Length: 198
Ligand SMILES: Cc1cc2nc3c(=O)[nH]c(=O)nc-3n(C[C@H](O)[C@H](O)[C@H](O)COP(=O)(O)O)c2cc1C
Image (cartoon, rainbow, N blue to C red; front, side, top):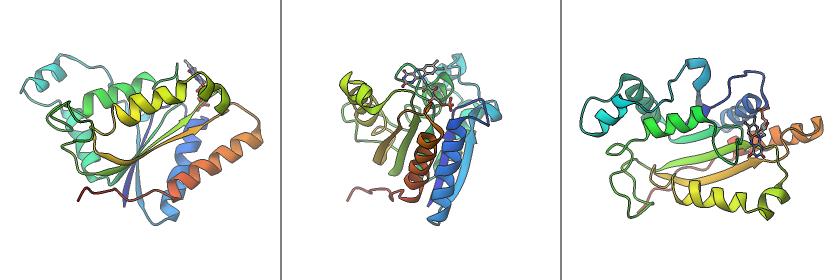
């Protein structure tokens, strides 16, 4: 498979960047080709603008969106890597998703979140988080992510299967971080093929 890894972190020495690298190493060891979309390094503009609105209304699609959509088109699997910020995505990746996965290209209806215009792709959200797993589960944050992302967003994009791979306690001890990087490698190695509907 061809795997696109989309990273949202400005610091190449961050834990998130290391998790992305380990995920890619695992995917390569399993025989997949990988491409990294390092959104900060590439200077992607995440601001939704009048150009995006004009495109949505049938006008010309902005060049940078066309470039990103071509990148997505080549991928059989997509992994988003981003630090959990206020139980959500940081703004760079949020903007990339809002601008690139457009109405008429990714989806064209809202009644069934499992219907996409895109072919099936394996999808992974690899998310370093400061919190522990018990904190996240007890407060309902993880259930909220399941609802918003797994049910409410990534079906529209054709992601099937889709995996929420939380790296809990990412600011913890060196031992903790080593085991989370192994979890990242394993997620890349075990990447499933897309589930194509019969
Ligand atoms: C603005 C901001 C918001 C954050 N919000 C959360 C949060 O809601 N839940 C959480 O578990 N960690 C939160 N964190 C902690 C980050 O998830 C943690 O610092 C990150 O996963 C560490 O990865 P990094 O070293 O690659 O930045 C937040 C950190 C920042 C800077």
